Amino acid sequence: MEEKHKNFDKFKVGSLPTLMYIPEFIAQNEQTILMNHINGAPLSKWKSLKNRRLQNWGGVVHEKGLLPQELPPWLTKVTQKICEESGLFPAPINHVLINEYLPNQGIMPHQDGPAYFPVVAILSLGSPVVMDFIPHTRFTEKSFEEEGAFETGRDKCLNDRRPFSVLLMPRSLLIFKDAAYSDYLHGIKDAEIQCFDGVVNEVEAQNQLELEFAPSQELKNIHRTANRISLTCRLVLKVHKNLFKF
Image (cartoon, rainbow, N blue to C red; front, top):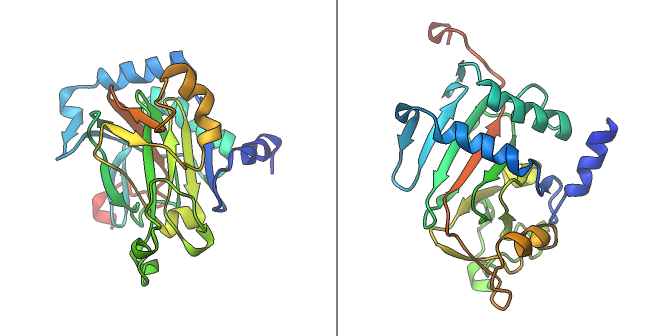
């Protein structure tokens, strides 16, 4: 493994094999440039959903693969940085979903589809947010809820696949694979105020949190006052140039 990939290992958080949180992965000016490109996209590029809106870059993901479109240079720059520094993708990232969340919007717990190589990198912009990881339903035969395992953000006994949470600060990168990808759903609560008590990366996020957001330390809450933009960067291994070749 190259030296820069070895250095990436220091960003592992929590108890799962491959869950990495990299604070300030991009600089403030890089965030501004990305936000300008995203906000400057034609209105037709946005697709409105019930609880958020999104942009799709890289082409159409079909159950049998990707009908590709070339990523624009401003996206290629950041996806190349992710690939080169992490060493976790076997080929260049070729698909990016950009989601915009209002301060009271989240996303239901979900798992990424089978078309993707089982690694996902999420770059967060704008506002901090807490992302929850919940064991897949196939691992919840006994009631974790009865045992109190759903207390906010607690990284409890992860070998038994218990829920945990990660605080995603602006300009940070979250990468997960292995058990975090295959055995868990990930989601964000629809709430303007979120508790980060017990998140697996509280120490890693603390400096930026105190400097930029001055959270309520007594309750360990963040107040989402601005929109959050996320770039979900993934690799689709099967690429089809022509729909009729399926």
